[in-house]
Amino acid sequence: MQKITKVVIPAAGFGTRFLPATKANPKEMLPIVDKPVIQYAAEEAVAAGIKDIIFIIGRNKQSIEDHFDKAYELEAELAAKQKTLLIDSVQAIVPSFVNCIFIRQPTALGLGHAIHCARPVISNEPFAIILPDDLIDSDSCGCLSQMMDIYNQTGKSVLAVERVKGPEISKYGVIEIENFEDRLGKIKTIVEKPPFESAPSDLGVVGRYILSYKVMEILGRLPPGSGGEIQLTDGISELLKLEDINAFEFYGTRFDCGSKLGFLKANIALGTKSGEVGESLISWIKEQKF
Ligand code: UTP
Image 1 (cartoon, helix red, strand yellow):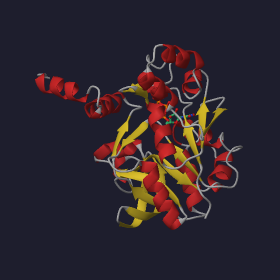
Image 2 (tube, helix red, strand yellow; image 1 turned 45 degrees about the horizontal axis):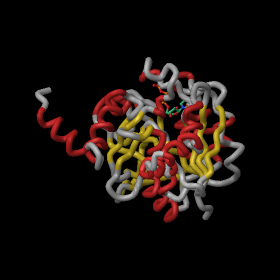
Image 3 (cartoon, protein in one colour; image 1 turned 90 degrees about the vertical axis):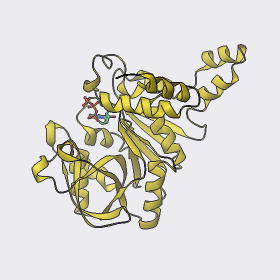
């Protein structure tokens, strides 16, 4: 079984749901407490044993490259002022044994197209995907680490899923499954954003995937799908015709930080856990008469 050492983190979308904040700033750089949301994705990847992080970026996304680069002047300034904790926090963004690779998606043609932009770096090997918008907070190990365990047991592609209540399901890729036991099952079909009435289940796909490289060949020849975009879900649907794919209901809480409500919830949930401001935030919330 081939080991998974590479993750693709797509970050070339326009982030229109966050305008005007995202007019000149990438939504992936919006902070959750004191770290940009994309840093949580990189940390989850590193914790899962990833060695190469492939960021897909576009115009106006230079600050993502800068964030994962060394900041000599800043570190020198902090060193001169003996602010060692801050130096540590800046240097620990990505460990030195992890490579950060940046690839441009010239036009935002959809998530499937963004993933296909990593094709030259993904040879014939399985790889992971983390959508940085989906911040997953788990008390045990991270979502991608949980999925790596499943992959290491089965050798098959695996998608993270969660149960979605009511009409919200029509905003997700939705799966039909057989024998869902111990949070794991074989996917029968997958469909992007089905109407609520015809959704095949309440299991929505969230932003974590481990996929066979064959999906790259498929994405290269896919026509645009839902919303006129090249959809990763359509690529996975084609991959299902060639190989088994498992769905795994991960342990943890997901925040959709690409939406305003999810972003605010993530800041509150992680803020209350912060050693620096957690207690004060909880006391403040208790005092409010919302
Ligand atoms: P989204 O559809 O949530 O991102 O894609 P978006 O298009 O930026 O958001 P809105 O709807 O306009 O607010 C999920 C992830 O895929 C990336 C996005 O940057 C985000 O991290 N993406 C999406 C790309 O990299 N390229 C694309 O063409 C589309």
